Amino acid sequence: MIKEFVIRFGVGAAQVELALEQRVLNPGEKVKGIVTVYGGEREQQVDAIYFAYLTQYRGKGPAKTVDFGRQLLMNSFVTHPGEKRTIPVHLKVPPNCPITVGNTRVWIQTGLDIDWSIDPTDKDFIRIEPTEAMEALSGALHLLGFELEANRCVAAPDGMEHSFVQEFQYQPRGGKFAGKLDSLYVVFVPRPGREEVLLVIDRREQLHKELLRLDKSDAIFRYRAEDTVHTLMGKLEDLISSKI
Image (cartoon, rainbow, N blue to C red):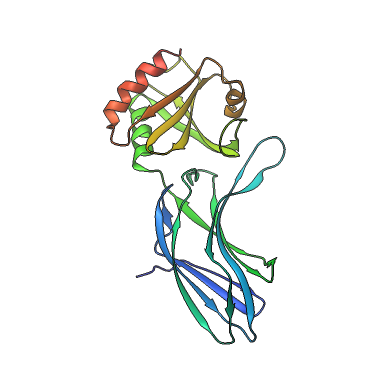
């Protein structure tokens, strides 16, 4: 049964609904849905239906809204007066989708392209939760005495695949690293077939400055999705110790 998660908007005389099976998703997760197109009072040529993921990030200046994943739902078709057209769809959350924690928000937009004119779209906020692999790494950091202090989406430095990254700022509240560093920044970098994390040990506050410098405190940490929390704890402890 498709749950109540409907995005509805009007384009001229036509209307479209997109219903998803669920509204709580993970990065990289696939989800089924149904698009319903309602014809209006006259025929209309629809050139495309699109589904986009959006968020905001900060660089220099005001926050920027970015479309970081778009999927074409259907190519050209004609809506007829009074017609109801139902289209099953399979969508995939982009692997680099940020987690909706703190002030980070992700929303979706669905739009119709009619006669080569993109019509205004509606937006609906969705909830994105960490993957099991991300939760395992966070659990390992917690066992080492780190607590999540903040998160933010910031402009990515040159050389990275995407225009922004989501940084997680951890502070050592206990354990062997308390008093030895101010913050540990974590960025999850989606890679096919493996987990990859950029770690930055920093005594300043802004990760994106450190990413641009890529100084000796930076480290790439790779692990397998099946690694246990305690396995990750040992590996992270060794890595962080070698950097301070």
